[in-house]
Structure formats: C-alpha cells, structure tokens
Image 1 (cartoon, rainbow, N blue to C red):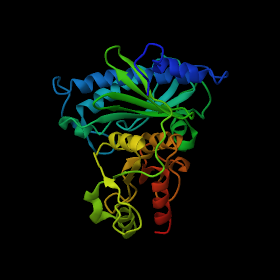
Image 2: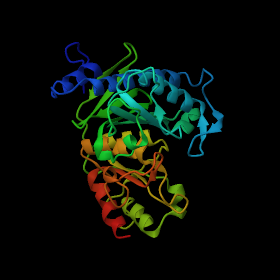
Image 3: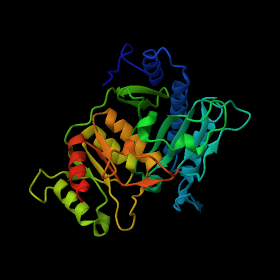
Image 4: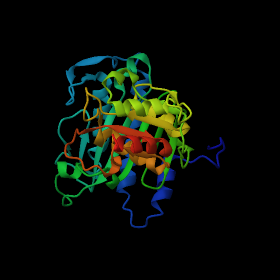
Length: 337
C-alpha cells in the first residue's frame, strides 16, 4: 500500500510513464488510451455520486442490443467514453455492450492502431439501490491496414491478443485496476485532488479462495454436473472446506472482492442461457486478462477463456474466473461432464 507521504505518492500517470520506459519502442498511444479512460472514469464516477440527486436514475424506454432495458446511466456512461476517446487519433474503432455495431471514428479525426471494447456501466440495474457498479474495458491492436476505418475483424480477436484491459469500480471509493501484461495494478481515486494514486501494486490473487460468487436462483436450471460442482465448492460433498457464498449481482463488484480476497466467480451455462450470459469481448476477456496477470485463471467450462476465437461482437459465454486452484476444480469436473 502507498503511505501518505509526498515522496511515496505515485499517480497513475507517473506509473504508466515508468512502465512505458521499459519499452523503448512504445509510441505512447497505448498510454494515451489509458489516460483517456482514466479521465472518462472520473466523469462517470461524478455522475454515479450524484445519482440520487440528479435525474440520472431509473430506466429509459429503450433496450440495448441484448434486449435489456437500458438505464439512464448506461447511456450517459457510454457517451462519456465515446467522446473521451474518439478524437485522440489512437483508435480506429470502438465497440460497446450498449451498441449493436462498431462505433466508427469520425472522418474529421485521425485513426490509430488500436480498438477499444467496453461495458460502460456493468451492474447498472443495481444503481437505484446504491450497489457498486463498474466500467470494464479491453484494448486490442488492429489487424486491418493502418489508417483505414476499423472493422469488426479488428474486434473479433481471441483474448490473449489484448494489449491492455481494466475495470473501474464505483463503490465506497473509486478504484481503477488495469494490466498491460506486466502484472495487475490498482489505483484509488483521491477526490481531494481528483487523481488516481497507486494503492494496490502487483495484485496477487490467493491460490485458494474464500468466496464463491454464483447466482443460486438458477440452480433449478443447472445441469447435474454444474450442480455437483457448486456442491463441491460449498463443501457439501465433504471433499473440501466450504467456501462462503457472496453474490452481489454486479460482476465488477464480485470480481473485485474475489481478486483481492481470493475466490471464484461462476456464471455457468443453464437451460435458460445455454450459451452463457456474460459477454465474451466486453466482460469475460478483459477480466480474465487481469486475473491471469494476478496469478488466477479463467475458463468457459472447457477451455481457457483467452483462447476462445470470437465469432460475433456480442457473443456470450459461460464463465468461471478467480483463484487458480478453484478454477482447476471446475475445469476437471466440467471437462468430463
């Protein structure tokens, strides 16, 4: 942890610059994307803090591409991120969980070498009752020729090709966690100065976890193999110490707790959602990248999530992510089932 002294304070800008210096070939474009995302998250955090006072709570009369009712803050957060990143000349396109197709960079702006995929406000349906929500993002290097318009092909890359990923949790404090493949690092927003300060360097998730995050309301829709897996985590088969069930219903909040304290987040396929519910590109891949960089693991039940070759922008997937030893149990049981 960073102590409260002038000599030990490390801002996110300084940290990113120091990491960039380790790579003399770096152009600074990726660093610029991270700065822009940090700025956008501060703007979203401000809207979230005012949610009970300003007219930003509640649902709109529109649905997103998944057919889910959009919350007002979903749209606000989406617009903030797009406007913060569409003009910097670093991206060639973006894609959001809230929009059906890719978000093109306007012709009046330069186009860069990266694409951004994001969930602008994960868990937004919980914001009316003051439950933590978050932003999740993933950055990939484009595969189409430089200078042109970004395409879906630039987005549909397996997760192991991510060059950066992160999330922001808007809770009792605002915290940004990101990785560029050099470990996972967390920064807490100091509201007094409006700056992210390094608070959790080189995060390491425990090998075995204390917490199991799963929506047991879907138990009746699980396969017998999945039901047996959850029983094992809960210690009901006598083969391991029981994990404590902690489920917020906001992916970022559940993942963040498990990342720091150890545990497993599970959203298995079921008869209502046979291909899973979470979005591979906007949720599963970025959090899996962070988790692996912290010493954890993530699978879809049969293979490493980051090895999955996506075929659609809004592709869904079953998801098991967290402490490596706990994910290994899921991998062993589900592979045979």
